Length: 175
Image (cartoon, rainbow, N blue to C red):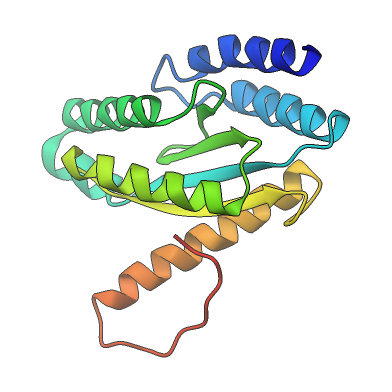
């Protein structure tokens, strides 16, 4: 019962974090802190999914700020429409979002990435993803963000490489 109340209170605060397009570092910091504390206290796993909006600067330069803001709103709505009630999404930076997935292992996160990719086909921009799971990939916020960031940039490099002649690659859990 205590776990459900804690998750319920997290859920109520989570949706407010993405209510504006402004980056919300305090919202992000609060979310990762509370998610990590909850996971440690109840010995539960969780995953974070770092998502980068591909080509946002070029889109903004080509179509203007209003169009880029509308594209970001569309992406946020697609996130919210495809996440569980206990999941949360926060703006992490200019073109990055982080999704918190309580009680999600890597398999669950892979399914979420697949679902988000399918949903994003209606958005004017695409996303690249990097995933980290607590405690498997780290037990601190810094470690989890670092791992998901490394995997995000490996995914972006792989995507960029697809546009050039193929090069040998290694599997690094990128999405």
